[in-house]
Image 1 (tube, one colour):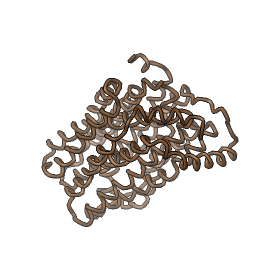
Image 2 (cartoon, rainbow, N blue to C red):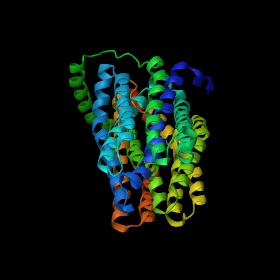
Image 3 (cartoon, helix red, strand yellow):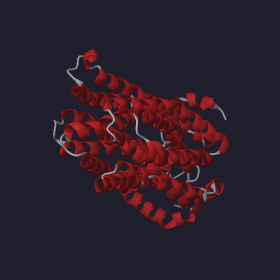
Image 4 (tube, helix red, strand yellow):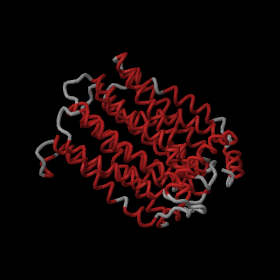
Length: 430
């Protein structure tokens, strides 16, 4: 294992896109949007209703991307256009992030629509960003490089989030009128950060040239046919199918915790400022932890590393639902989740990259992201529904735990080495 690969320009440029768009995941998706949506755009509405509305916004955006991801992946493989798709979706996310600044108090419908579009930009760009892992790294370094990307995302997103939290706590330091204006300006800073730090990837990441490149119209036709053929033959990749089922289960829990943790804290009457500090703690713990998991994955295998992370999630979710009461305990939970969050995500990406045909990466990562986004549909809807009908946020969060348990059971059935051989045998046939 050679860590000097992390100094390669394409690897650094690729990782900087994670640094760029993680500003959206931290400041908007996980941080300020749930608080602002509840207390500013939906002011005067009960917590269970705002939780339901937030779940609908998250779930709707994820559903659209889930349906589009495999089609876009197939088309981009044929057209040699993964970079173009990546930056098209990134541009959507940048524009919609800045548009949140203009939504006035009480206009929760506009906020939800713009947020859904921004989330589509974020998630859509990640379909193609993930697929570029095989273009900037070799298979033996997938775990290390994937972990490095997540680590860069955590530190980059965390740094901007730190600035944004300071803006809300001390608006006068920045010439702002109050915390409300600070949050709105933060949406603009996310857009600028995302755009500026995407430039290295634009300049230095190059996708592997497509051998049989098609025009846009031909790419659509050939891509859809390719997708149909893949759906027919994917049954031969038995270990890939098992992994995708496992991934769909456990990543559902991961995505839901990321998007709904602050809302859970608000329903326990915790102060928004304290919750923002907890998110910051998660970000900066997750930075070294993601790197460590990348190294761990190279040493013991991605599958074993993922299993460790799932176990921590399972125990933490049950503990939070039954025992969490104070902000100090929320901080402890934030640290615990931070230790494994990036590891589970990065090693999942690395394991998947090792068991798919190398000549169909965007298409197969389209399936991968499709399942991840369908998980992001189910999770928020699950939490929203349980919270609405039981008015008990603890039951809602505990309902996620079985997803980690069943995900681990299915993952234990995956034979990674055999999955790699199955993928190699399928190259060039679809």
